[in-house]
Length: 441
Image 1 (cartoon, rainbow, N blue to C red):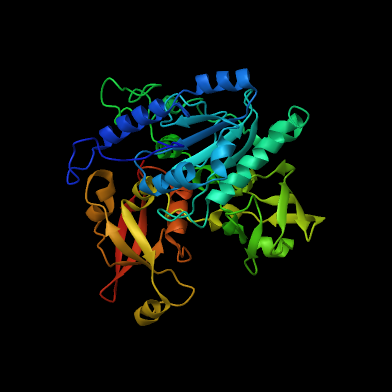
Image 2: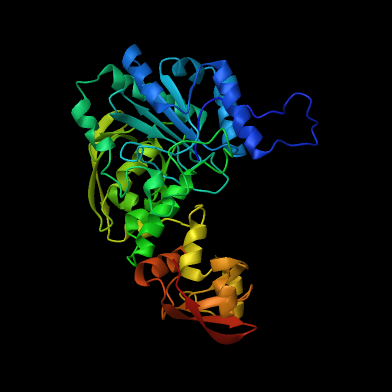
């Protein structure tokens, strides 16, 4: 699940420091604290939309997991310490969403592998922009910051001041209808969850976490024996996957451009301020990701308007076919499900140059060491097939050019169907060992 705003995780009165709170207690305490403070509307989007209609204010809807200690750090600073953000928040109707049960997926579309995501929108559902991105399992400082959030909020207020005259230019900030309107309607979740949290029972087990939406979406295609579409497998491409490193303290400002990347070939330069991308105004890195997410997997030209040394410039970003696959799947929560599907529970890591040389593997050859072998259920399929920790995968389904774990996972779920078995070769104690690996749902 995902959430927002003011979360101060502490201990209940009288509870010793040696007795940490259970997750259930943390969730219930969070609700009690936020509702007692009365600033954020807690997990009630309908109430938020009504308040925005009544006051004429824009909405800030934040999704954030509880308990997620990395995001707690951001929230505590946001509310208690930052003198810029606090007054900005008062100009919004602020809604804290703590689960995705019943969520309108035609409106709230975001990278579900995140643990913090924010929407700034009008009371009629028009999206001004998004905030929140992630490219690592635990580190987030290179992707989001308090100054960056302040800039995004200021940008949303500017768009709100110009609304509805600017409504047509905001149309692209809302996506196409998803496979299912609400998370609990996906086959993998249907019957297991309802549209609301169960505070009368086990509130934690009743929650649909954000990453479960991504899991359910991938399983929807997998169980139908269909390839997982690239846009589903590689969602919300990070700008750095195309060589564009943006400053997390700004709306969308270039820190550097990686050589020989699509961004370099397009002519982006350090200091460029991205004003528009594909015609859309940008409030944060997340808005750049939104545009990239909606760019076809087969690539094409994306027009950008930048301000360079104060002057407007037009830049054409040309993305080649398969451009999404430069992204990394390994950090994502949903990679665990992909490992079940494509590698039977294996976790793989690349050999270093020295290790590759010692093993006699050419520089352009495949060399992925088995870091972990799943032990239970479907994640033990590789173990049952004979794979061991320390094996070096050098061939997978006849391919020797799959250099990353991401490449192996993508190949398995796009080129092989559930129930098929594929050949794999590993190096073990200097010898080549042939194994057969089952593909799973």
